[in-house]
Length: 170
Image (cartoon, rainbow, N blue to C red; front, side, top):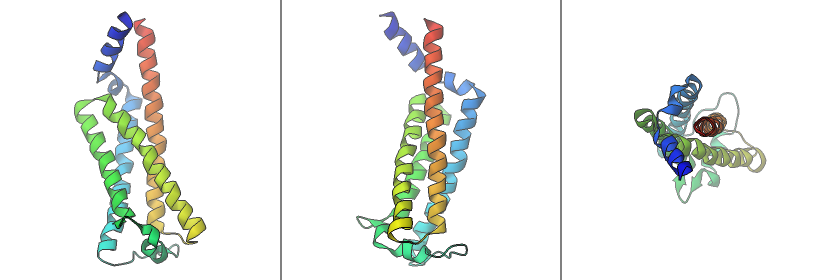
């Protein structure tokens, strides 16, 4: 009985995790990198719908990558899916900042794994199937990788914070 009351007390304390400076920095770091990915994926989406190939000055292969059969999933540009992913992360983080509901932050942090795994798949396709590299796609992959690392740190920090709260209340 006491343990269930303790768990409800901890889960209802939404702002406790936010109080620590390290946790705030993690959230703001996530919020700094998600817009980078969103802008990159949005640019690729716009270029797709305008039937233009983004210019690649450092590497060659943007045209092959962005016009390949792998650039669409069920007729939807992968760049649009990426933009929606980044937008969802941004909106979840903004909602967390507004409400301090740690469950929202945990879902957003866990969702970064989806973006990371999908980016890994797309990088694999570029390197080993298409033998071409799209610089903009690699920027998105880098953004999703950084988000994933930060997301895993958030989850680990939250788990550690929750354990400390449980120990302190016992």
